[in-house]
Image (cartoon, rainbow, N blue to C red; front, side, top):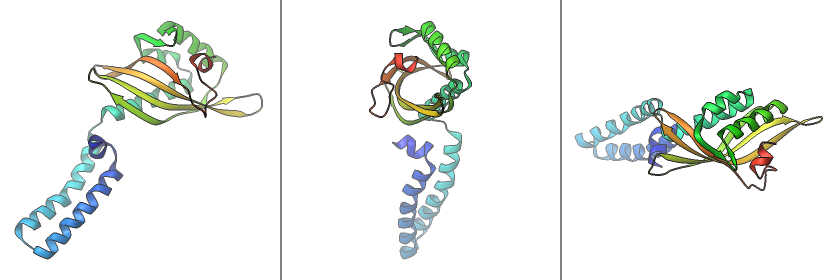
Length: 189
């Protein structure tokens, strides 16, 4: 929560900063001491500093969201090789290893022209070994016989960071009442 406040969400930072700064301003206006003046101006300087810090620092959570967004754009572009480069050598998706998953993905993306691929509703957890679990809702428009269907799936990605890059080690399809896709076979039909 602290990293999201400090580094990811400018609106949340402003909402937390504004009441505190208002209290400092009221205190300063009533006391007019040298200490209250300094504290007020330090508080006023913190917001621009915090906003610059947010622009400069990229958190692991932000990296993972960008990673998932890149996977969605690769799927939309039909770029199976880019998807393959994003997978760990020991990758597993249900009963499929990396090679089997890449083959099925290539077959699926050849048959279906996915457009407007999106990811949202991120739930990201980190463990002590540098492994992250990302639960995300992925969706895209898939042409049907006479119209476009928005197909949605709730996915669980297990990812690990090597150097500066994230690699997916495992992919699971999570059951969802709102999605017709309930298994890996339905995802890669």
